[in-house]
Image (cartoon, rainbow, N blue to C red; front, top):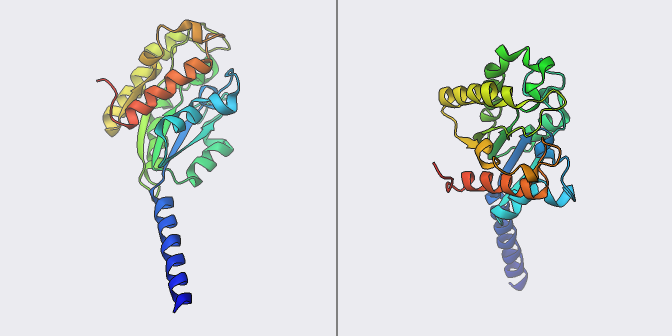
Length: 218
């Protein structure tokens, strides 16, 4: 009889553990070098997806699928679609997907394909939306460009990339996270003018956190 009681207790504990595992909300942070954490001191600890996980706390798993130099454009010089991170993010079976791409698309060699930007963004959102987990998807407006370099430029990001993203979000009825606004006025936290430092990554993570939790200011 005692053996059966122990077995029953073990089954209950196993079931409880499985339930807890199923309750974990998986957050996929899709993006470029800003998501990856390029330029962030102690990147493994201070990249924004890692900080986001700490803010969300128990019950969430936030994972970094950022790729330095990645473009949203399929015809860009480093399409996110062709990266291992894209495959890994898909296999992660996320419940939430944060898409932050567009900065590298502003480079002249990429933006000559701007006519495809809206379609490619919609396709990426549709790809993740079609997963069995039916994740909620947020589209992030790119961060401000404090110093034009490597072909990345503020004029294209602010004047063209963001309006196209807003159009896709409206058409697909997807929520956006205004990282452009959240990261404006903090030039001191963008040492190279493009990538935020650890403090900037923290501010970015908090903006995403507030959106996920429904606390972002409208």
